[in-house]
Image (spheres, rainbow, N blue to C red):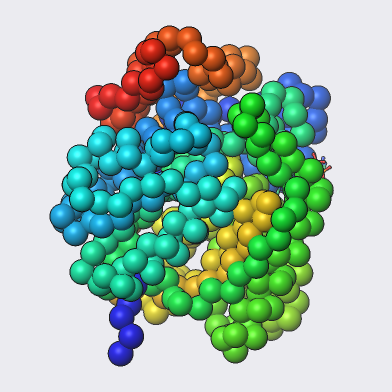
Length: 390
Ligand code: COA
């Protein structure tokens, strides 16, 4: 019998502030229905300067890290495209903040929004080779396009942390991936700026094309079809995006299968609709949202996963829900956290957006009062970022 490998734990963190997108639409002179219905986003998480991918990633992992056997950890990977340094990885800082063992292989992976999946697949292979070890994979990002830019409505911030192990409690990650890569310029972030550049329409077209090609290859390789899936989760730069891709293949399924996949897709978008794009973490935010909101799923259900990272890589794979998966989720706490966040006015959102640490060698002290997680970026001193545990 082949060994089961997959996601044993899931943790989530997103900042405590958000901007209401109907209010943002009005401020930008746009019909709110374009943002709420046309794009499919209602709220957008806004990170204070004291939070970055390191603090958000550590906060997401802190949801379960003290409940696991840390001595089994052999690998820690941070998937991000919002790195805090061109050389040193944020993963080693997370290793320190979480008190992880020293004898752990620790690094960061970048390939736009695909970095989390790249980390997950590397972790899967690692556990296959070392079944008694586990791997921590963190997907964390801050999506920034700029005030009043075309992509502004698709910003967001947050992190999803996953523990990968043999005999996982939540969902297996099957060895059935179909993937493709190509050198295209649909979205990128030049090193002189933290604002993303995107060819909006082109990136949308490429996402759909990569989905179709990965799905066709997956079907060829596995003989599986839409009827075999309880749900299909997609990378969600905005919640309409995955549905645009799914819609191109759903007519191949019968009505009952279409209804099930449509209903579960809607549930997979609940959290993204309120947090926004978290790039590498978005697909895993969709998985969390589905598992914590879908009452009809049961153990043994097959879940499809489509990952897309501009530039570009696409990958389709699947996993099976495990017998006690509901016992290892934290849905009530995640929903309560989202509900208690502080709403910013558009002016306060703009001020927080502009308060981000500058690309400059200056010393900075951040406002500690604005963070809620256990870990915080206190500032920069002598060009070294200062991280603290609260
Ligand atoms: N009521 C309801 N829907 C409305 C509307 C209204 N008043 N006004 C517009 N819409 C709909 C449009 O019909 C369109 O629907 P469709 O996509 O089903 O055709 C949708 O809202 C978006 O409108 P559009 O004019 O295409 O938006 P845009 O030119 O502002 O671009 C993005 C949208 C997502 C491309 C842009 O925000 C962007 O560049 N984002 C960053 C890149 C990105 O996320 N890429 C995704 C792939 S990785």
